Image (cartoon, rainbow, N blue to C red):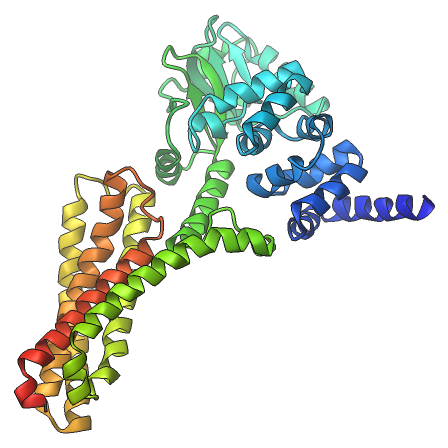
Length: 437
């Protein structure tokens, strides 16, 4: 018994000294084993560890606890993170946990879950500071000092509301400190204040943060009632999270997968897309099989197939990365998407011509056959034009169809560039086979 208590004490100290690394270590364990460790820890220590886990793995661990144990840990985490975890739990499990949660916590979490994922309503915090109109500068400063003594959250901005909590304006600390003590706060507030709806999506918030450089953005209902604020640091963190998720999704991995996720979790998330990739590889192989006869007569053609495919894939991925970033930063929209596509086709043609000349010269010098160089060079131009076109069009089309534009676009892109690259190269070789053989 003493050994168990000593082990738990060591784990507690590890979590308290470095909660991030402790969470990573916990995530690397099977959910049932990780849940056993959480069960042996005091609820507040387990909650501290849960705060640093992604919502998916955290939900998997909680699902291995009893309903009461899960509730004890869950209501000690921040309600925003708890809401993200909660919506990943099995419905039957979550229904059993809800009655065991604190009523105020449960209501706050339900309010958050009412908003769409990745919206301002999901990202906002309600710990802002607001003064009613008619409040004097002296009273406002006194209240801010009280908040500081009680170590309650304050911000660089304070908001002014009417009697119905509708947002009227924003104060900053400098104006507040320099104003006369008896001046009403509405006389020194900034009336032209930017506010967003709780349904504003994350992409628009990112664009606002990049354009305005505010420390926080107020969130108001359609009737103007102030309900929360979104801190810029949360928007930046959200941007970083989305960028890493998009990078994983782009190549067919799960957005929730982490370096220390379990082997089974990695397998179940990656294998479906590897199967799709295998099917598309067979499609590219079928194109090569169509020209099996010409390859048998001129085996040198096989040498150039990976060269054409590699260049097409690389060029397409460059375009895809630029277009996805443009969509994330709201630079690319349905109104200007076709202009982006035209630009990428032009860039592909120029790059294809440049690399095509080099490829043609290399083939001619190597085999002494200018016709082989012509086939390789023309195929390179065609492949890079298609790479630019597909790299720009695939994410735009997926967005228009309502899908995540980053979702495994790389797999579809390489399929298009491989099929077109192989077909153009071998097709041209077939047309000019009399000059090649």
